[in-house]
Image (cartoon, rainbow, N blue to C red; front, side, top):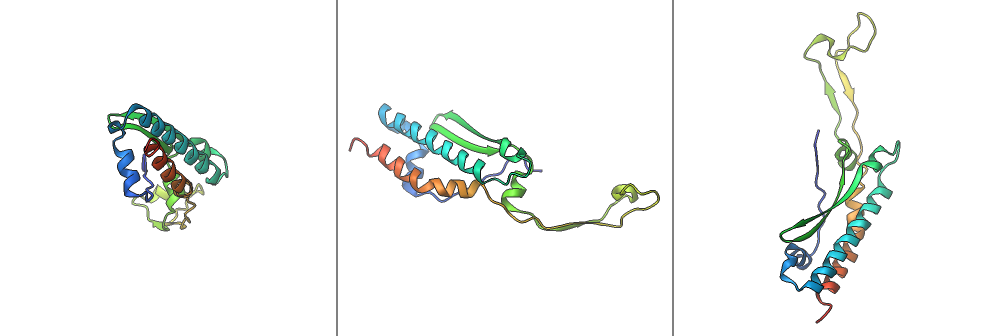
Length: 151
């Protein structure tokens, strides 16, 4: 199982450049950009939690937001800690499992073994990418405002 997965979204080159190294800005601009990063990361987090399928609530409870200070500035992360989150986000193809040992697919009935197991296809139910895509236009506008505030 995957320990993590990345969902990417298309942001403009100037926003990517502005957020790539915020240490090149003065203290006031850095503070505004940090505020934008915290606010938009929180909005992506809320959007992901509201969009995730909630059959048991375990997946929604596993979504966390995190902030890290790096040499290039503050970075915000929204991540799903559940090991099956990537299957829910992207879906999975069907499969047929054939055991290598006879008792590998023992269903519990005495003396009876399955020759194979059919695992059905799972449809994708994206929740991270739509959350980021919903926030992206406002994030781009807010980053441009924070950088161009004093100009």
